[in-house]
Each structure stands twice: as C-alpha cells, then as structure tokens.
Image (cartoon, rainbow, N blue to C red):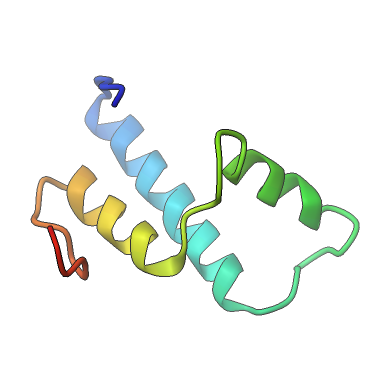
Length: 73
C-alpha cells in the first residue's frame, strides 16, 4: 500500500474526480465513445478498475470516515 499526503483542496479534487468517474460508470454508456477507452485505461492502469462500491468506499476513506458500503471494512 502506498501512502500520500494531500492538501484539503487536493483531497476535494480527488473526491470530485472519483465521483465524476462513479457517475460516468453509472451511465452505462460512454459520454464520448471516441474517448471511452482513455478513462478505463487510466482507471485500470495497475489492475482492474474500481467498481461503484469500491469508489464509494474510497471516497469515504479519503474523507476520514469508515468505509461506506464495505462489509468487511
């Protein structure tokens, strides 16, 4: 696991980006089919992309809360 430090503004940007990505995934279709592969390539760079529940959990964790939906958290 890698740890990193971010400022409050950076944290907010990460959360906004994660929520945007979550919304994007919930649409069930790409906003722009010509660019769809770019988002998924970035999200899955080191392995399988996070699913919607994992994105929720990550957002909760970044906010310093218990994971929102994880059963084993």
